[in-house]
Image (cartoon, rainbow, N blue to C red; front, top):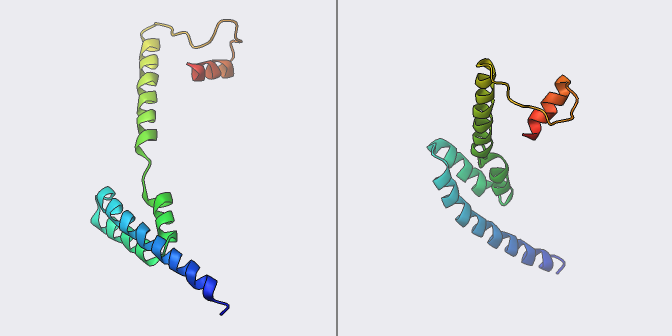
Length: 112
């Protein structure tokens, strides 16, 4: 019949969905510390085949820690420069030969 190729495709999608669920649920339960959030994401993965796992990858998996570490390092460097400037030690913020404009100093500080 005309639906034979679709039945084969649907069976492959079902197998893929089962494998995703079997891999994603333990991963979600190990990542999420909040039990309500873990249960909610698990249900989304189960009830929305394949699309639920993609939603979890985009919205549920938090990537906050690396940018937060970078911001903290930047703040420590900024505070060190500010405290050195308050003590009267002038830190060299621009390269030799650059124009002494506020935007030039800002761009030079970004290079360091």
